[in-house]
Image (cartoon, one colour):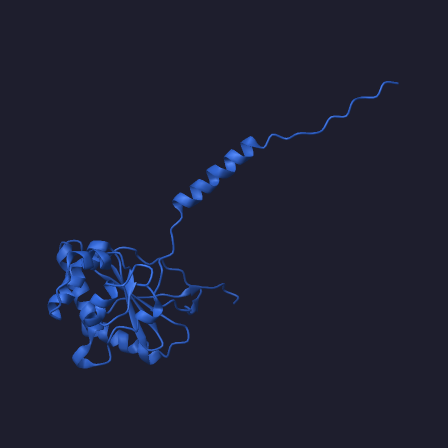
Length: 208
């Protein structure tokens, strides 16, 4: 009896590789990079899921009795910086404005802002450079100034018929932060009649 010649099985993986690279390209192009934070916080857990707006929003991060600010929109950040400069008699160059426009969050005294902006880009977001924005001293409540200038900037940019797009505020507090600090921030907002704001939490399951 003649024996059949054995041949090795070969699978063409070309099509599979093409599909894999297409999927990889899709996920890379559609994914959103996480914004680097000068002070990452451990968010308190919540079962309620509410989407926070990404435009016209000011985020106040609270941790270890310090506060940090995040402003959405490059042009908005530059405008608010210039407003703060006028209030504190600090003139920022066009280069400094451009650098600040690329910073999505920060936590420094406005009088130290020039020094921060002069740092190399690789050093600028280091935690040790961001010691928090002054807010406890009534004579130097810079948090209140940032909020007021951000609200005024947003108000001027929007028409009176489009009130829903005025500045929104979100508070992102560390889960271990004392409530007294968060209450101080809320009091500052309420003194400017900013009575509506988001509280940022982490999502957990119902049976947690």
